[in-house]
Image 1 (cartoon, rainbow, N blue to C red):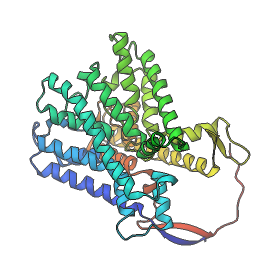
Image 2: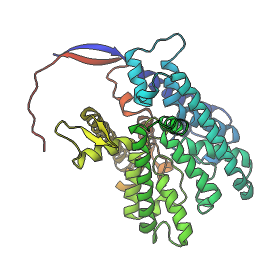
Image 3: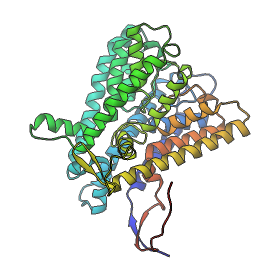
Image 4: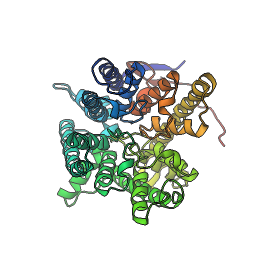
Length: 446
């Protein structure tokens, strides 16, 4: 048996933070006067709403418009705390006053902030909070006139709610049909798209870009260049694809300009955003497949968004198409990507696929076999990918899921938010490192 030495893990704290936040949020939604819809709010629906808000997903079993102002405020707070938690809380915990950063804690921070930023954690935290609040306020100001013109109640709160929900890539809306009523309203969809993209870039990229602007000789890190290039390529390719594939389906009847706007929004929103301006059930087969792929990919590491991350996919694709040397290292933007990074990327995606397959298998049992519902495999797959990618898009079956099915989706959202690495911790407080191991064996692959 290999000899192992336990290594203390700080990631469990993040696990507990999100679990506690979801539990408290669900109880508050259930006990306080937060419900204004028909009947009473069931505990499972309150918990589902809280989990979806903290996981910044946007899947709902009851309409957010049916919550009172207090209920919507609680949901908004949960979105903000959940969106910033994976970054801001980890920084606060790891850099508490009078606490020195051990080598392990430095390595943990590096997973979120890259080497160049790990020695200035307090400044990172200030920048995270300042940039988040600043962008959200600017987006709210931009949205306010459109919501005033729309004539709804509390346009100021509505603008702020959607600004926070958009930047946190949460997808919650106070409108019953999300943003379908504003599909061709440029003053709503454009600010929302800008917030979605910025929220998905990550604070590492923000700071790197700021350095590039203020310091003439500063060169963007490889991380930033991959994130920016991958994000741009994904949006442009998806935009063109949706524009042509959905001409006779989800975008039927729209003029050229409106079709371009709506297809651009559809290209942006699957990458963990969750807002929709067209019903997802009306997409063509190619459009549906592309949406599912985009939900799995997600946005950038260290951002509020979910998914397996664009950098992970970019590194794997680059390796798969044969852009590696004899040592397994890849070359990107005149930088070397070690074989160990490529291996971790493939392991990360493998774990994601394992979780997704498990979730889909369980959903098939709970819905089709036990509950006797007639959901298609596509509908269940769309729901599962949306939950794991913390996206929030749905073909419309979320509210019809059984009790057990809702539990499965809640667990899948939790897995997608907290992250595969935290979920893979072998024990609540320990990591293990082999000092003495078995001899190497030969295994044929392929």
